[in-house]
Each structure stands twice: as structure tokens, then as C-alpha cells.
Image (tube, rainbow, N blue to C red; front, side, top):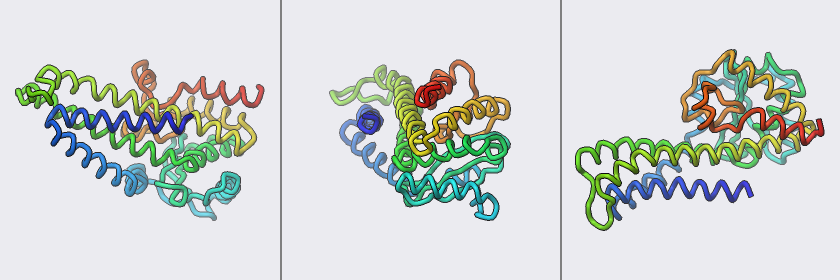
Amino acid sequence: MNQMKTVMLLGGLTGLLLLIGGMVGGKAGMLIALVMAAVMNLSAWWFSDSIVLRMHKARPLGMDEAPRIQAMVETLSQRAGIPAPRVYLMEHPSPNAFATGRDPSKGVVVVSSGLLQLLNEPELEGVLAHELSHIHHRDTLVQSIAATLGGAIMMLAYQMRWFGFLGGARDDDDGGGMLGLIAMAVLAPLAASLIQMAISRSREYGADEGSAQLTHNPEGLASALEKLGRESRRVPLQTHSQAAHLFIVSPLRADFLARLFSTHPPLEDRIARLRAMSGT
């Protein structure tokens, strides 16, 4: 069900991009938007992992540095039936983690130094299993494509505002007129954000369930999420908003508007679901 929902939502993002292209340039605009979407998705598939690793200055974590982490990843990967991903370290006191990689054979799990200092062994195992579940279900690729399409829509919508205000809207049967163009420029980014949010939230719930299945200990991840939520607010992590969906807990500010449009489900809800699995 989650996979079908994700496919439908990605189709919605692509359709929104084509609609913008059609409003600006008719059939030719739709074709250009389609080509642009294909190129951007291919780029996201091929380069997203290296880009996000450089963005957060992550480095490979050697076996001699963290043998227990490597052993956990090996064991959990065997249970999941995927190749063991590479483990990277992000030197930052804010406790967090994310996964990247275009497919399970190219998977990477990134943990922050703050996370390693904060969590005990069952909690750390729960977090690693969560990230491995993302890799196993190819969420890392899906979320990269969603972020790329969303970014393209935001960029086109910004340009559409100027196009509409300068009277560049098409008035024939294929266009929506100046007012329609301006309205689309305002509504398209909102719709794209909502679709991205729905995709990411769905995948987070799925990864939480996957972690519980791999570890047979939902309480480990539940306890970890409690600590991560509390400490990440105290020691925030600076990252680009387009990368926020990658992390196990949102690194962005926690005001009302941010929570409303967050790519992550409420932590309280995730913790309650996990504890319901363990019967506590």
C-alpha cells in the first residue's frame, strides 16, 4: 500500500511539473518540462549520494574506529537480505542519522558524532535498522527524486511569478491567462511541498516498522527517538531544507509552521506506534 501511494504521489509531482510547463509554453512547454524532469531524475539517481555526503562533510568510518557499529550493520544487513552499506561519520554534536545511495548495493548510512555519544547499544541498533530499512526499500532514491522534482517546481514557480507579472502569459486555449499563471505560481510550490511531505512521512513510518522487524525490539528505536527529539532541539543541525527529509528526526526548527509542513511525522506518534508494537 505504501509503495503504491508513493508511486501515485511521485506521479502527482511529475504531473504538476508538466502542468506548469503547459501553462507557460503549451505543448512545447510540457515537452520541455518532461525532458527537464527526466534529466533531473537521472541526475538525482546518479549523483545524489555524493552530493549529500559532501554537503554534510561526512567521511568513511573505519572498522578500527567503531567495530561495534560495523558489526551491527553487518548483522542487520544479513537479516534484511541486502549488502552491508558503507558507514560514514558526520562530525557534529547534534545527534542524527540518515541513509543515502541509489540502490542497496550503493547504500550509505551516515551517523553524527553526537548520536554515537548519546545512544546506548539497543537504541543505536534501532536507528541503524531504521536507516537500513530505507536502503532496503529504496526510499533513498524515491526521496531524492521527490526532492529534485519539488526543487524544479519551486524554481519554475518563482520564474512564473515574474512571467505573469510582466504579461507573458499565454491567452490561447492552451494557456490559463495571466491570472491563472500567477495563481499557479503561488499554489504549485504549496502543492509540491504537501506531496513531498506525504511521501516522506509515509516512508518514515515504513522505516520505523522495518526497524522493529529487523531488531525484534521496537522499544530500542522508540527510546532513541525520544532522546534524538530532545537533544536535536537543544543542539540544532544546520542543513539545507531540501535535505531535511533524509534525517531520522527533522533537523529544522520546531515552530508551529515548521511542524505543520514537516517532512517527518510527529515524533510522539512514531514513538506511540513503536511502543504499541512492543505492547508497552
